Image (cartoon, rainbow, N blue to C red; front, side, top):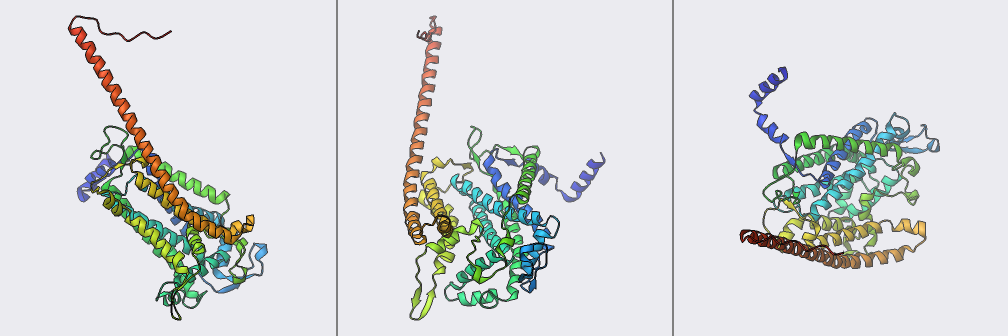
Length: 473
């Protein structure tokens, strides 16, 4: 009774009861694929929590020092304060290695969950009206997460991060007209830049991008709640105008809480049991040691692949290089990918002429051209992603690097086109199978209705109802 009085007193002064009740009655689709977005959200929460712990011990400084810590192979080595503090986090502070590796795994899972979530939205047509803005905000979260991850492992100043920054510096310089000034402006001086650049990366990683991603997630969730989720039409009651699902409480809330605990448990288990980015093996950044096999995180492999596949040419005017070669793979390629994805809702509307509101999710076969294009586009990006590992294949398998590049250039053109035609044909065959199945079921229902009508007529005439033929021997 005392709690009820407290709740009543708060409601009388805030008027929040209707909003609270509405939130509790919000319906969630009862399908596992709608949990992918929640996995990304909970991975981000783990990222923030572990990131706060790491911030307490990381030193964002390129000032030089000598290592005298517990990791024997680096004893007496000269390195930056940033790299030394990352080594100390791994070996000196309690739970430091667990937190650092969990942070890294959470970043990988965060990006992967967003990608799979966006694939689900694309192939079910959930980006259509009235959810175009929700789709665009989701893409903004993904590309912000890529930049956030790049800054995260770049500021450690190990050999991996130094190589990544060298590539990033080259890509920044490749921007037409403004590249030189932009590169010097960000780095402070020609590569590797001055000490202020480390501070800029640190502020970007621990403040600007986390706040930006948090705001985008909040906007994304607000739009989802305002427009509601889509749903699969599995039951007759699930229509474009009627949503059938699980209420927020007591249905969805326990599921979400269990998923949060499961995501956190899996990430901490990975952080404790599966090694990732062992920076003590890479060593501090030294240009002369740039062939030690260190690789960037997987979600940047598509950009490395694009840089490898582009033929070596520049656009020049007289003696002036207007567009250096890194521009094509490092700038134009991601802009094309992002531009195509952003344009998807409006391009499909224009091509199909469908301007209606869609609250029902499609099966992939329901939109053959969309599905075929999605598979082809994903394959195109995926093949470029694998081209980023051409140097590793050369080292491990001894396959000629130049031959692999030419093979990748050919398959990135031929395979997506071939898959587009195959997937289009398969989806249309599946649609034809659905139509035949519907026709067969309709004919069977009509035959049963006719049989019942015939039996009813005989009974009204005083005759015997027809009997089913006897089963054979």
